[in-house]
Length: 101
Image (cartoon, rainbow, N blue to C red; front, side, top):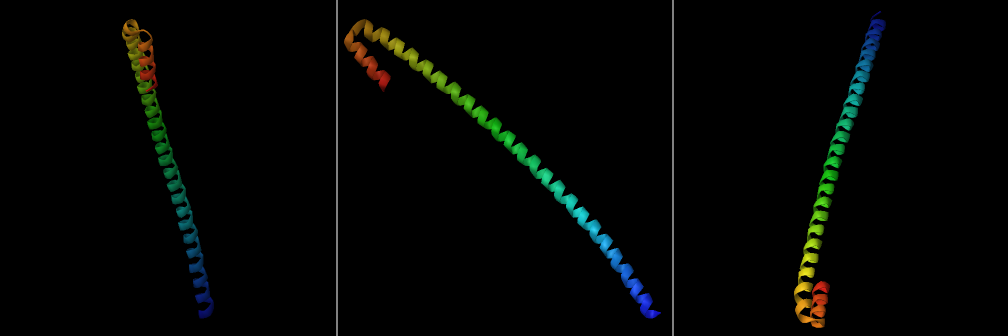
């Protein structure tokens, strides 16, 4: 009877170990799933921030380019009016050189 009772108790303890093992593995799976979801949310947030920064930089660059083009056009028109009005063909050559540079 001792042998049968000891084998019964050992099988009982092994079944309780296996059930606790499955609970801990399911908890690990839940933890991994939650960790993956958190990482994905962080990555999405970083992507959104990067996209916003890139859009802002592109808008700023476009605005700066437009301002530079407007300033250059105004300068060229003023130079044309001043130089061509007083210098004739020589003034046109000077303006063309200024525009090329």
